[in-house]
Length: 420
Image 1 (cartoon, rainbow, N blue to C red):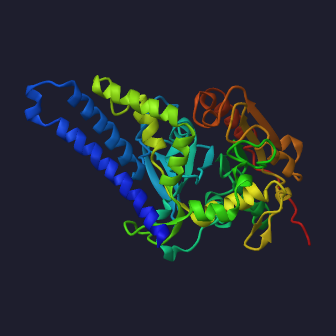
Image 2 (spheres, rainbow, N blue to C red; image 1 turned 90 degrees about the vertical axis):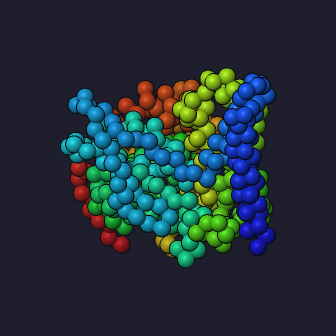
Image 3 (cartoon, rainbow, N blue to C red; image 1 turned 90 degrees about the horizontal axis):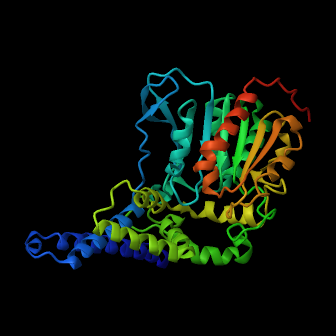
């Protein structure tokens, strides 16, 4: 119960701050006070507006905000987001562009389950949807999943990806961004062994910790500095009574957000102080740079505790993927079984989360893959976010990924089944 009490305490603090912001904004806007202009009231209203929005966004799932797209035919087409596979912990969604013939490039974009919603890849989707059929893994907030749905750990995540790949078929081109890269590699290898006709055409891994020890960073080395007991004691809580997942053990999004914010407290503090000033001067808007960034950054989701803990233990501490020792449902996955799926890795030279060397390690694990089916790209000057959503992605990496997909678009020759 104490873990549930802690969860509800965090939610109470968040709710109280949202209420304080709304109260300050409303009181400062009281009509009778407008008779005597007072700069203090202007600043009070600005503080209230920024505070209310800040704490309100923490429990709201952002909208994809992709309603129409201008395609290569020069026309605007409406976009309908359809759920094509529905599962308890995550759905597969398709960005269906109406009035356009089906595109040859079919892309499965694997979004991270790392505390933020899949909408973090909004700009990535927008850049691909112009001339690709885009599907995205839309993971659910664990606080909204009843305990009766069971557990969800790294093995379940891998099996989900395999089901999504099976559904989409062998013409699929998988693009995994950051955290899911190791598990996507494992899912592809397991599918290559278990159901080779369902494996994708290509696999692109972007900034993922395939081998966290290759080039340690503060983020990837975190698992080596704490014990699993410490993590379970300090990071895991039970969902409170307010949500459908009451009683479920989770790594709370609010707890993770507080950790993120504390790492760059001065920078975030300045950003919010500057925004209050802009609101007070009438220079802010709903879609200015500050709100666009923080509306997404502050929108956090709870992770299933077993997924969080198994990720730290098996991917970062034990390096099971890097050592090719990963086991799913009692079966040891052999990454060397990938023999015809073209694999490309993308890294950012200035990535301080998954540093160069961590992702490209995937190519050495693909021992059964011919050299012509392997490719690697290191983007100069790019940080972690830039390699999948920033200028580096739009101008350099995206064209390279699409060229890689096109170069391997031909149906591969069938491989003779291994006889035990």
